[in-house]
Amino acid sequence: MTRQTNPVATARYPTAAAILHWIVAVGTLTLVATGAFMVGLPRNTEQRALLFNLHKSLGILTAAFSVALIAWRLRNRPPALPAAMARWEQRAAALNHVLFYLLMVIVAGTGYLTSSFSKFGPKLFGIPIPHWGWDDPLLRGHFADGHRVAAWTFAALIGLHVMAALKHLLLDRDGVFQRMVPAAPSDPPAVERGSRRNGP
Ligand code: HEM
Ligand code: HEM
Image (cartoon, rainbow, N blue to C red; front, side, top):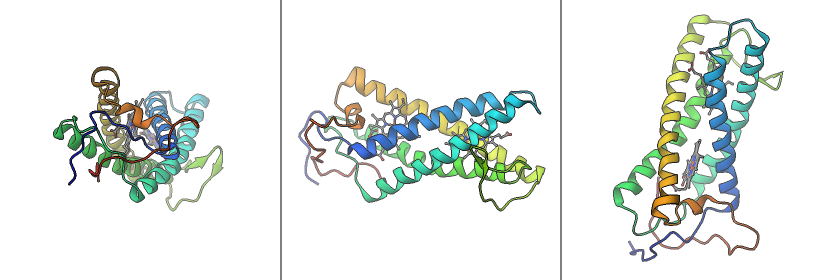
């Protein structure tokens, strides 16, 4: 392994990957907010139905962008982290990212299954989408429990991730945050410097 000498991160994520990250991030944060809000609304009201449909549609869209982000990540290495970053921090970030990718699939999958086993079914902006479930309150309840636990685990890890990102931006000022800022057309191309493989 070649030793990295750059004290700050100089390479950044390619623009397409950074844009995908921010779409998935905004989608997921909105889903946590709408999900948490809608389950407290009174049953059989228009507002609850509207919020559930919005949540399902946004969930399906976010899942599609998450699949694109996962596909990008399976084919590419992330840009190098600064050499000064502690080894445990690098490992913690890599572990968090693996859990993120797993949770993207688990949370969207359990949400889809919850809807599939309800009489309403999964819908994309009012259009029913294919599903292989039926109206089964018991199964629906199990999937809803799984969806709730996975979604709140995801939210807790996102909290850690955001705090770590802000620490890099405001305290460490080591360029780690800037790696995820989409490049302006006038910026130099995203070149990976350093040879350490970060993450899975
Ligand atoms: C990243 C993706 C998603 C996140 C972060 C998310 C988040 C949440 C949260 C926080 C709740 C409230 C849980 C509670 O406190 O009881 C919830 C509920 C729910 N979500 Fe999602 N969700 C996602 C994707 C989806 C998808 C793709 C669907 C369906 C197509 C879906 C369908 C539902 C349904 C039906 C409920 C209500 C479950 C119940 O009645 O207890 N979600 N979601
Ligand atoms: C305001 C919220 C967020 C901020 C400020 C933020 C910032 C960042 C930054 C600066 C990085 C690059 C640093 C690093 O490699 O660790 C990063 C990576 C990453 N973020 Fe976020 N993020 C946010 C929300 C999210 C959310 C909600 C998700 C998940 C749905 C997410 C998923 C990821 C993943 C998977 C990576 C690693 C990409 C890789 O595999 O290398 N982020 N984020």
